[in-house]
Length: 492
Image (cartoon, helix red, strand yellow):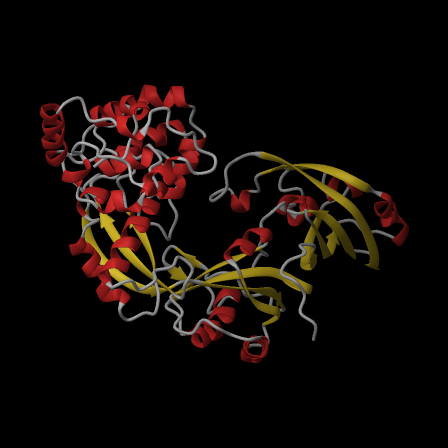
């Protein structure tokens, strides 16, 4: 039964004609009574009854408008015959919004399957991974997930005899769906925003959820409607249930690392399918952490990255790791300190400090305002013409030098061609001999230091060659500091 008021009737009719199922209609009408969703679809499409006190509360919740009609005037669908006809159509049609997930997979049978996974855990958070089916509205994939989670929480709790099912817990039940929809459903987006769909070595398809969301955000509503029908075409089949897994929720670890080796990449270096270096910063840090957390995998990120031949000194570079499916998830400060020591003893090429467990929300602080942050470097410079100490002292007086940097040739294969403005805030020099000196720089994050020194065939302007009126090159480069105030320092 639909706990809807008279004012909802035009919305109901519109959604029914668009091909929405009854549970999606309830969602769009902001019905918050969970019992309404637990009813079979056949009952949800029947005539409404008198509202319960719970329904009144849901419609009169803070921030929502009170219904204009008294409870006795709760609406029916136009007539019993019309309701029966609509119900028959709904039973035979796949919902254009949820692709059948809320029609076929939100019943006691599916709840019982989830309970098999739940029973091995104390509490669970039910989540959904909807793969493909990317013709949904840009926000609706997330909303379908939330609706499925909410409905299934109630069903699972009922199936378990009242066992509490909470959203913040040590475990997560992942329910994976697939749909026969193919990547071709999104090809029209690729023509609108080609930069959003670039192949990467770790992705089987360029049409990932994040790529589609990014493209939709860049596409105006008017242009979208010209390229794709709204409402969408009725799907010929619903999603199919592929797998149910009970997993530990991710744990997030952060810290800072130093890199002392000039032949160590930050991440595994694979070119044309061949590995070029035996290890990486990522792997040296991750191996002890995965062992300690007894995890299945990880995702590594950092505040920028250094080239393979560049050292990272000073306080180090902030990094963060998402630990996937950890079988041990609780570490106190002493245990984290011991884990940090284990990492540092495992290799003399890197060192980690301030290792700590952080929240998912805190992870975003590492990337916030990243380009506005500053970084400090020391470079060993070679000059073609002999120089004297007094020839380079003028560089110390240069402040707030703005560079126009065209995408460097060495990264053009993986970065879009563009001219980026970057600022060198200050520089200082230390003379060594007629052909060498040290150059210290404090720059805006994202500045290409090597290209500033040698000019990159004129792609960076101004550059050090122009300033000194001779060819220059960089022999060594060290990152001295990354000025990001995260993660918090841990006292020794």
